[in-house]
Image (cartoon, rainbow, N blue to C red):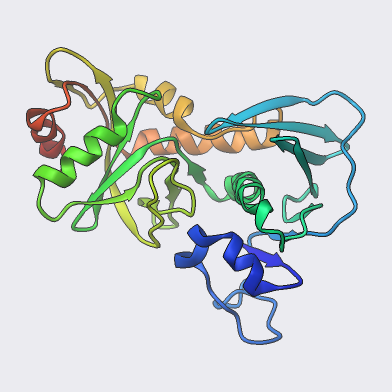
Length: 283
């Protein structure tokens, strides 16, 4: 992602969680270090107004509401919080993102991070890449992705792994990026978003399995599951319902992930025995 700003140093201070992922191209070089074009270009200081028609969709990501507007292939995203409102305009090819953020006001940090999340979500969809609502534990280059609704204990289970499984580490605790690579492997990446747990690691691991967590009075591991995997994965993937093209990309990628990676269900108490069961998948 490339951010055009009047002050790169000031904008970088608005994005502390992006620091581990930042790369600096050679002076005057508008391409990324590998000489490919940026995935997206995000700009500020544009004069934008909120569309006058009704939004096509209201999206809630991590407690933040976005209004999504569509017309003639273009998209507008509105975000409002504490009486402040900002707009982002998205080009039809999902490569250019213009906003009315100054990118230099410290009070904009929340809004920049939130709008970049939406921009990334839209831009990566054609590249067999998803952002999941999940917690990820990694050990020796292999990862388990813990899925489930809010409150089912994803972060708690990851925390128990850190306590009881030597050599394990938290890759991301809320918003990992999952991509199907050119060689067919499914890889999970750390991200500059991680919910309420600060975990911004520029690292990746091969996905060994996905584990749907449910609270229960006993510890019971079942799987691999069959077609049930698709529904759980689809619910966990970040998605813009009102954008039909985006939706089709997400559905296709979710189906591919479901075919390539086994999904288990772990009904569990938050204890060491539950960790032993999920660890048995990785071993």
